Image 1 (cartoon, rainbow, N blue to C red):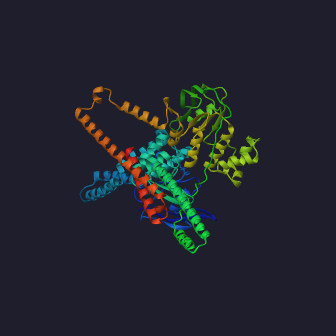
Image 2: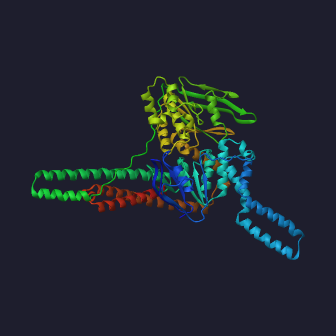
Image 3: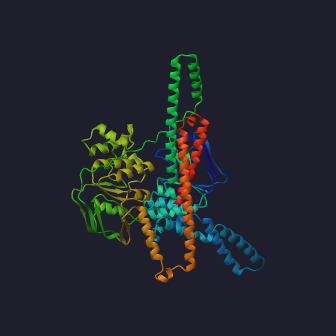
Length: 625
């Protein structure tokens, strides 16, 4: 055990945010804390760090544990360059290296006892230098800088000249190099492009300490974590496994609990009716039987109904009219700022009904392309044509279209004067703005609240071409899922920029990758894109000569043997899966029988057996993938 939260509770006045939260983390474990925005995830982190005192319970660390914290708004403001800031993490290593060089110089002119003394000192310092992995320090620094998407030129810039997002990435890099025993990361992927997120996944997967992340990036959680701590209705529930396994188990648990609750309520009602009927006979025997049944009813286990799900937004996107088949044509687009050429001679064709993801590394110009299409920025060269009856709705990631001084209500009503107060309130309620929340000034809103306000405006635009620039930023997982559903059912056309791979995979029907060499089209979702990228990389790495690609006879034999073993193993697993599913069905039927449903002990035994089988079934499915 390296960290334990025991019955941790936190209230702010009468508002109870966390109630008796319990979980335990072991060394080198990777866990994700998930839940809707505002459920208390960041509050929990601050309690763990000691920045907030719990209202009840305690946080226990293994003795000597060092923690490191990355928050959503952390930045570095320094005169140092990025390189200088990273090198500063290893001041003690560079001090040892300097001492080594100093002693080396002194040994050249020393002899006798003095030389022996210097040699002993040199050996001690060298041992300490090696123990601190001094020879790997520079490669580690360069690896982190490159992995987080900084070019050589950017890494030489002073940090106080960088953008907010770059400063945040620099802060993340510095923390990773510090290598504390526990990393607490609050939304670490927000300012990273897809390549950098992939790098961070690999880095954290091999990290020597414990990692706890708050994240709404489902791909990231899937690939990094092996434990999910879900905060819902103020309490925590722990699930072993990644996000996909958590979702499957949670859904089954909820269905099972609801099923047990319904059966329990049905049985209670049945017994109450039987008691009432027996009493109505008004005979001594029937009254005694009624009393006996009443005692049995008092002892019967009362199954609790599933907790209500947290309130989630509802969103419907409906175009005002249908566009023509040719929706958007971009021809020969070129844009540069001074000597910085973003892209050159870019051409894109978008047809009606497509949902196209525009992806690429930070700085390749994705947002600039959107601003050129919407007329906010002029291209150096090129033409943008919109098809017949095309009406555009634009969601910009910085929310520059929102008036910071207006309230949410006024922002909607001023642009939609025909809407009644009731209609506006109903719309905002669907996006989880209720009561006096609708009168909050936009300038004081969180990123997630601004995003939901922008989505409210978008839903009223009646546009049939949606241009969405990072629409999932600051949205919680559940809101992302609802946005996915709204876009998939949208009867218009969508062009979007996103680094959320799960979101891209669900929504996109085509992917356009923007690189410094131009664009490349992939007709499919993100899984298809990754598959084709892997194939291309494999082809590029393959030897040119066909003879070098041939496997020798022995290798072919080994591969054939391995294939047979895999096929045998798959058949065995499939057979076990079928048997397990059959046993689960038998237990479900057993739980519905009167004999078991009215016997708490038998019901508990059957339910526990079913749960174990369901967990084993998930393990089998994982092995079959």
